[in-house]
Length: 150
Length: 257
Image (cartoon, rainbow over all chains, first blue to last red; front, side):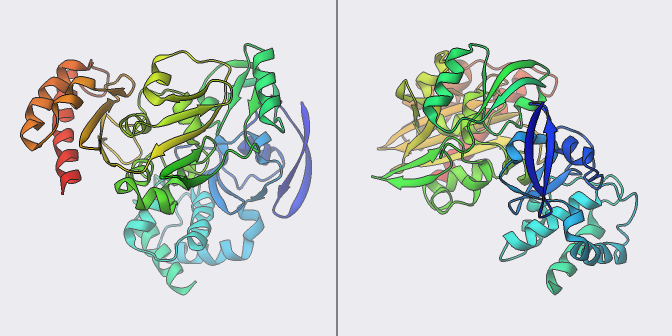
């Protein structure tokens, strides 16, 4: 085991990790269970978090690589998450909710990253966030509305 | 994936020493594909923090650091504006944007993955790879040799050429069923095909035949004879051969226009 420091939601955490440990497991071990564990292969996006503002699947990053970076989970953006969540709710996208934290993290990154939004650019950005409930149409409507007002 | 010891060296010298002192050591670039493997590694040597994340233009060449992520390539002005935008276009359909924020160009090259869309593109661009000890070598030479315990530093691509890459996949996030890359430099074409399902390979004879539009049918014929194609659980050999020819024609047509 190796002792490292992780900066999560602007707070430093001293943690013991093993070399092959993935960030999703470390985060969940620290109590950040909003970071879901789904496919565990980098495909589904439910474990999405931001590292230095860039959205990544935390199941595909060795925890050791997260040192000296700023990790942001949905717990660190409660107000913004609630705001985006309201748009999702209004469009009926609040079904099982398992993908929602990861989706919201991708929306946050997208809002910072893209200057111009088109339906194509939104879809391109969110291709890594799978949802087995909604069929994506409601999500797309909600995201467009959120981006318009933000 | 079990890793007994995980090291993050401060210098290339130290990284090189570590992988050469322990023959079972493994270099870690992005690590996204490595983590999918069920194996035990005694020593992982992480190349983050060694200054290998850059894209610069120098003397008419594009130099891409081995630790540059695919997302950085996707949005880089040079990668969008030069070489018909082939580098940006090629990476923007690989996996998801989230994963492209982790996966590096160096890891993709050194993994020599058979499904890679990147290898055929870099092959036709006649890319030069620069290693810490072995120095510079062509992409073609590197793919044929078994270079171990060295560190890829950067990929060098001559900007005075045009290129195109075509691929077929059932869904956006899937690996390509076949991919075909084509480049033109000084009136000479280079063709490479990957996911056959074998690794991306330069098609020497077909490339030589192709000089003008009237040669494209002949080049297609030679291409499917020259390279090996096989069945896998996703698609048949015959289908791959047929699609390869179609994709080459499309790539040529788009590039000429």
